[in-house]
Length: 614
Ligand SMILES: Nc1nc2c(ncn2[C@@H]2O[C@H](COP(=O)(O)OP(=O)(O)OP(=O)(O)O)[C@@H](O)[C@H]2O)c(=O)[nH]1
Image 1 (cartoon, rainbow, N blue to C red):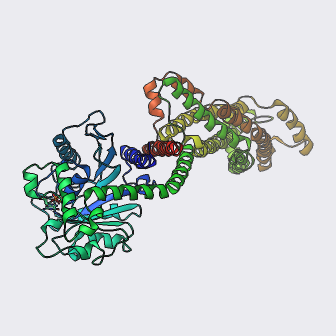
Image 2 (cartoon, rainbow, N blue to C red):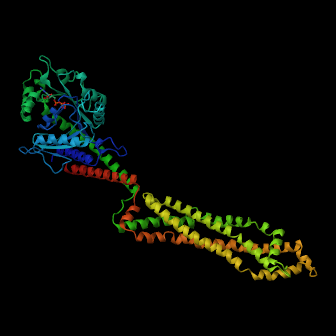
Image 3 (spheres, rainbow, N blue to C red):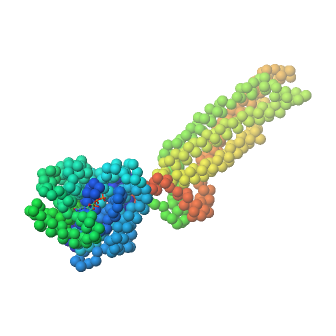
C-alpha cells in the first residue's frame, strides 16, 4: 500500500467511523469533534455551475441525482478508491454495508431515497452526510464532500428558509480551517458574481485553501476566453485555477460515456488555441490528481495534531467515564451485589456520623446533656405542689376521715400526679434523637458518592431507613414511658422510712392534732414530695438516655437496613433493575462518552496502523 493511498484511506476510515457514531461536526458541542479536525475537500458551487458534472467527471461515472430544484439536500461524502486496472467499478454506501452496487443508475436512486429517508419528502435539507465509496481503476484516491448547490430562490414545495439554510450548512463545512474548498464557477458568467467565489472569499480571504474550478469553457462567447481567470488575474488564489469542459446537456441526453467525455476534454485542451499552453494543467483528470496530492499533503501535515487531539480526548473521556461510574450489570445476581455494596457504602458513612468520624452524632449527646435536663427543670412542680393543691389532694384522699399520723394516700396521689409529668420530656427526648438520626440518614445518602447515579435507590434507602427509624422510635417511646411508669408503680420505701424521724426532729412532739391541718404541715408534705420527685428526676435523667441509645442509636447502628436487606433478597431481577435506575441524563451521557471513546480509540488504531505501514 502506498503512503498516499493509506493516508487518504485512513481519513476515509476515520470519517466513516465518525458518521457511524454521530460525529459530523456541529451538533453536540459538549464533545470536541474529530470530524472537524479531519482535512476534507468540500465542493461548493451555485446552481447549474456544473458541480455535479465535475464530480461525475472526476469519478468517471454518471451517478448523481438530477432534476430541477435543489437535488442535493444532504452532504454526500464521496470516497474514491483506486483499484487495479481492469477491475470492475462498484460502489458501496455506509448505510448499506452489505450491498455492492455495480449499476450506477441504482446508486443514483439510492442517493435520492436515502436523502428522502432523513429529510422526508418535504425537500428540507439535513446536515447528516451520506457516505458513498466508489472503487474503480479510473479514479484517484480522493475524498470529496458534495454539498447542496447555493441558490437564490426556493422553488415550489421547498421551505422559505431553504436558501439561508443551505448557505449556513455549506458555510459550516467550508469555514473550518481543515476544509479544502473546491469552488466551482461557470466560465460563461462573470467571476465576480460567482456564489462559490463569494463564499470562499468570505471564509478563506487569503485564498490558501481554495481551489478555483472554471467550468463551461466551451460555452464562452466566440472570441472571448477565460485566461484572466485561469491565470489568476481576475481573482487571485494561492492554488492554480483549473479549467474544465464537461459534457453538455446534449451529450448527457445522448448518454455520452464519461470516459469518452474525459478524452474529449483532453483533446479540447490539447488543441485549444487559447489554453494550449496550459493544457497539461487543465481538465477533470488533472484536477482529481491535483486534489489527491494536495489532500494527502494536508493530511500528512495534520496527522500529529490529529493524534494529539485524539489522545487528549481519550484522556478526557476516560476520566469522565471514571467519574460517571461503570455501567450496571444486567443479571440479577450482579445487581443484588451492586445494591448491597451501595447500601454498605451508605451504612459506613452513616456510622461515621454516629461514631464521630463525621459531624452530627454529637447532637444526640446535646439532647441528653441540654434538652432533657432543661425540660425536666421546667416541669410545673411548683404549681402541683403548692400548699393549696397539696391541701386539696390530701383532703380528697383522706375522705370523710382525716389522716391520723401521715397522709399515706395523699402522698401517693401527689407523687403519682407528679411522676406523670415526666412522660413529656421522656417522649420529647425520643423524638429529638429520632430527628437527629433522620437528618443523619439524609446527610449520609447525600455524601455517598457511589449513590449519586441512582436517584431511585437513594429514595428506596431513605424510605427503608425512615421506616426502620420509625420502628425504633416506637420501641424507644414504649421503653421510656415504661421507665416513668415503673417509678410510679413502686416507690422507694427507704425514702419514706426516713420521713417520720425527720418530722419529729424538726417538729414539736407535743404539737396538738389540730396543727396537722395548718399550712406548715402541708408545706412539709410538699417539700417531702418535692425532694422525692427530685430524686426520681435525677434517676430518669440518667436512665432515659440509656433507653434511647439502647433502642434507637444502637439499633440504627446495627440494623438500620436489615429489614431492607431481607426485602431485596426476595425481589426479582426486574425490580432490582428498577432500583438501579440511573439518572437518565447521566446514562445518556455515559453512552455518548462510550461511543466517542470507541470512535477515538478506533481512530487511534487506524493512525497507528498507517504509521506502521509507512
Ligand atoms: N457545454 C457544457 N455544458 C456543461 C458544462 N458543465 C456543465 N454543463 C451543463 O450545465 C448543466 C448543469 O450542470 P450540472 O453539472 O448539473 O450543474 P450543477 O451545478 O450540479 O447543477 P445543480 O445540481 O442543478 O445545481 C448541465 O446541463 C450540464 O450538461 C461544461 O463544461 N460544458
